[in-house]
Length: 225
View 1 (cartoon, one colour):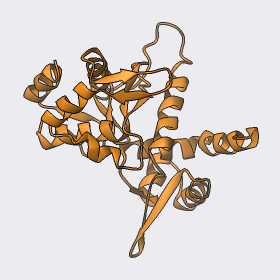
View 2 (cartoon, rainbow, N blue to C red):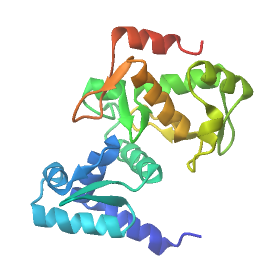
View 3 (tube, rainbow, N blue to C red):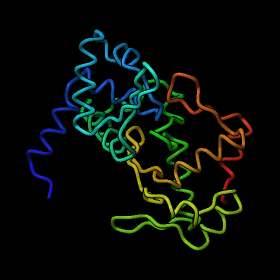
View 4 (cartoon, rainbow, N blue to C red):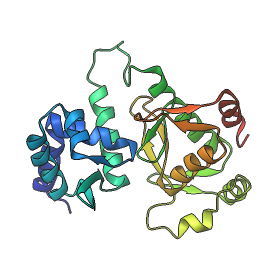
């Protein structure tokens, strides 16, 4: 069982404003250099180096060395899920009547959450998968139905291959702006990749925004109905 000391240690790592900004910057799923993360955190390079060392030692970041350069990324989807939920908790603090979540309407509409689709369109897709009985919700889990396996296969997604991966096939992830779940796990990641492959959407460079083409958004809205 995780002790209160372990929770306190992780909370203290995430609680520093500069480190929180670094973690949020990495929610795009892409690796960043120390210089890029220093700029995102608004701190000097030496200060950023100290923060990154603590986050790496604490198991929240993974560092990859390529020649003289070091690239930092979140240690995994579990870390991203915790950050997303903390963002939701933080958004609950404004007074009643103040709209929560990103100010940029494009971020609210569709954004990447580590490696899967979030925002209004991500939540809408999740609800459709449930309504069409492609996935089934349980008390503490979500599973793909036999109908779901068939429909995902038609869409170019091999569920059996995804089941061989080490990560969970599908998980709910509480969307911090919509306050409802979107789909995470290897299926959530593959769905987003498939949307990119079909050129229905693309990620705007340097942002978490997922930009759909007019046709792509229409196709997404009609998908699995």
